[in-house]
Amino acid sequence: MANLTLYELEGCPYCEKVKNKLSALELEYDSEMVPRSHGERTEVEEISGQTGVPVLVDPEHDVDGMPESDDIVAYLEETYGSGAA
Image 1 (cartoon, rainbow, N blue to C red):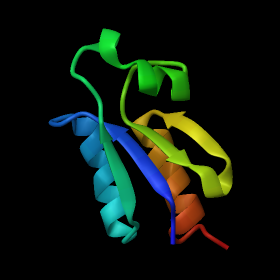
Image 2 (cartoon, one colour):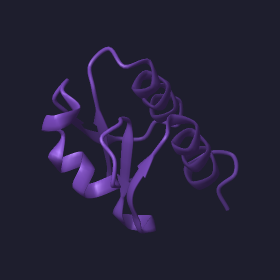
Image 3 (cartoon, rainbow, N blue to C red):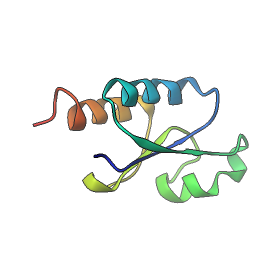
């Protein structure tokens, strides 16, 4: 099974988009809530180089910190959905 971690913020519509894709693909993941203040998001910044969320980590596929909801959704579909080999 996937060993995914999603860095997210409660109420974030971009995070919801990714969570909906994770749910549709029936993927289990760990959720890491980040602080509301960008200045306090040091952990997500260390992982992805920026403070925005969502950020996905997928060590099985060498994804260390993928930002941008559209990119994450496309990656999940390609890697775990109908695009998967």
